[in-house]
Amino acid sequence: MNITHLGFTGLAIRDGTARLLLDPPAAPDAPTVVTWTETERVSGVRAGPPPALAAAPVVLKWLGVEGVALGAAPVRFGGWVITAAPYDPIPYATPREAMRKTASALRDPRLAVERLGHLFRRPATPPLALSITRAGRVVVVLGQALHRFTPAGELDRLVRMFGGCDVLVVGTDFDDEEATGRLSGVFGARTVVVADLTGPVRRMLRLPTRPLETVLASAPPGTKLLCEGGGLELGD
Image (cartoon, rainbow, N blue to C red; front, side, top):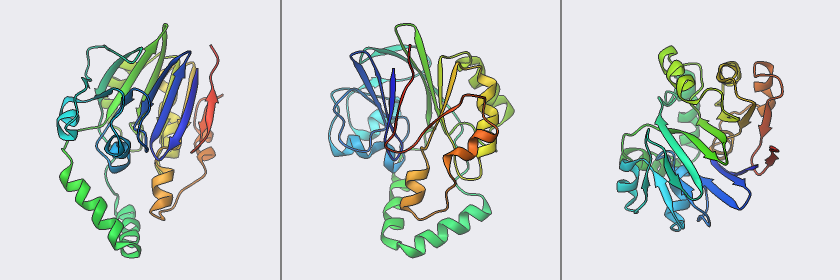
């Protein structure tokens, strides 16, 4: 199995002849899953329709694209079996982060207006965590579900649904590296992968970032890192 970082929040998972794209930043050339409505997560689908699309029902309706509706019941899609569960996104901004984002907006008002307009147009629906299964192997993609503000009840629910998977893929935001690493350990995954899912956007906005290696201080032993444009061979 191979996992590749496509840029921004995009990932590609390949297992044998099957390839699945998650939130690709460019026009997709394989079955695609959109996990949320952020600008970067829908930019690929907006650029060109994928061969097949799966997303939450409200997202499919908003995009105006026919596709496979994702939810708690497993569905077959593109050679994979996918189960989805919503999670609470990280708060948009702590007071300190709000100051950083305000400074970023002042540096590039045009980009800020575009992103703010998208924020108000998109539906108020939560992001999805995914369980992706093929040939008995389970990959769980949690996005940014693990952070300083993750409620205990939310964490328990995610562990009940997704614990014991073969591969756990998580992202971490700025100031959340310690929490992401620590919380990823409770899932009992055979392999933990921390992917740089927020760094590319923050760098574009000239917001501060930290090296992805920062998460390793609290992450389970053997945790792997997936940087923008990189790839990982995960073996059998």
